[in-house]
Length: 354
Image 1 (cartoon, helix red, strand yellow):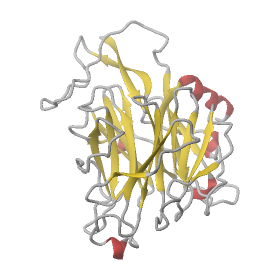
Image 2: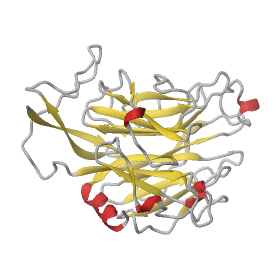
Image 3: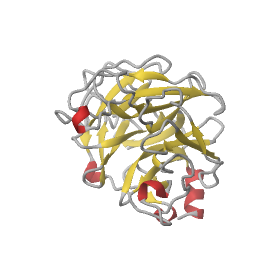
Image 4: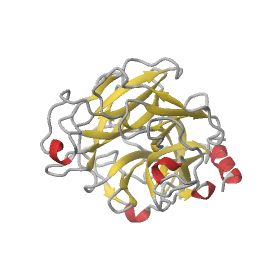
């Protein structure tokens, strides 16, 4: 029996993941038709980076707190060592209460750790607005003053700015902030959206920043032939391209409401409109991807059944297997983001806010 380490990346952060394999056989064989470089574990000597990463899940909850309903109660955090069992921190009470936006919500929190170690968070602050919420922290406990970023203030007809995500791109040193918006008459019409979705017909928009003070003009970034919400990105080691995007097809007639995937090489360009899938069942949302070794997980909110589900690929996205029965999330957890960070950060959270 041998111990192997695979250098992988999650949201731009270098991590070392370990696999136990018999003899020299890779634990995760690659499907024959895979054209990308194989994700083959290679033996490495022990180092300070071994077992240095843990995983966090930032989410909102259906549980209310302090007289606030769930979506307005604030930021929740859970941690995991294996990506399967997720344990709520702080007694599943909020770490941060929302203060910006017309509705003062904190739905769909997305957290990304920058190269200097600072955590940056964006979230949905209102159901119908043209801003998103933002705050930063060095330790996920003490947070900066909250700000409203007016990402769509220039679009007077914009109806919403939903589920913003933030991803650090090491290729250009920029933070990519992207979200779903409907601008009436701007996007190709989708059957049934007027009658069933109150006219909402979303596409994914983007702005970038280096310092969180100046932002590029918002632009249409992902324009598929379906209503798209809840996009999220994962930097993948050993994949057919640098980035895996997961996104929800929000079409209602006939109902899709499922998760699609796409591989992307360059984030700076407009994203290609084609996707693969679906890789999940219907009536799910809020996908969030994570790479552990040579496996890729996509977790998602089964919002009609009030639970979380997951699929896993061991062949770099060629095939996906439902592993919902293997994952355990806090009760009432809703749409959020998983990410890797140092074990010391997680241990500090466990110590201060078990």
